Amino acid sequence: MKKIWSFLVVMGIGGSLFGQARTAYSELGIGIGTLNQKSEIANTTSAGALLAEVRPNFSAFAERHFNDWFALGIMASYGWTVANDENHNNQTRGLSVKTDMFQVNPFVEVNLIKFGKYHLDRKFTIYLRGGAGFLAYNPTPNAAKTYPDEFDVEPDAYSGVNFFAGTGVKFRVSYDYILTLGVQVHNSGADNLDGIMNKTPGLQGKNDSYGGINISFSKALF
Image (cartoon, rainbow, N blue to C red; front, side):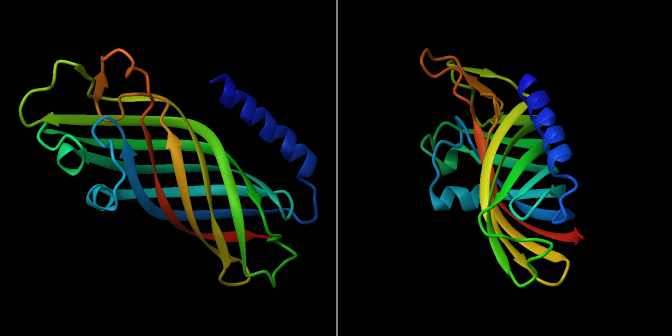
C-alpha cells in the first residue's frame, strides 16, 4: 500500500506542476479487451492455449494529459480468466479454474510522438503505460479427479496489489475522439490466482500473472 500512496503523491505533484499548461486536456473512455492468466494450471503460452482460454475484460478510464507527452490516469475494469490442464503441460491431471477479477489501477502514460490538443494533424501516437493498483479476484478451482498432494486449494475471494506495464497505439478518428489499441501484462502479486498453491519447496511464492489486449474509444475534452 505504501507504493500506491507514493504513486498518488506523485500524481498530485504532477498535477500541480503541469495542470495549468496550455496543452493540457482530459480524456474519458470505455473499452473492451481480452484476459488470459499465467499460473500453475495455465503454464504454457502457445497460441492454441491462449485462444482456447481467452475471456473478455470490460473497462472505463479517465486521463489528464498535462502536455503533449505526459498523462496520469485511472482505469477500472472487470473480467474473468479460465485455465484448464487439458490445454497445457499436465493434460491428464484434471484441474481447471475460472477466476473473476475486478481492478482499479492508477497509471502513468508517456507518448513517444507528440499528440494532443495542438497537434490535430497528428493522426496517431505510440504510448508506454505503467502503474499499480487494487486487484480483487475470486478463483473457483475444480478437480476432475482429486487435487495432487503438493497443492493447497484456495478458492473464494482475495484482494491485493497488482503491478503492470503496457504499450499501444492511439489513433485520432475525429477532432475530439480517439481509438486506442493496447496490450498490458500484470503481475498479480499473489500465487493463487488459479485457486491453488504449490507447496513444493522452491516453487512457492512465484506470483501468477495475467494480461491481454484492449480496444478503447474515448473523447478528448479540450
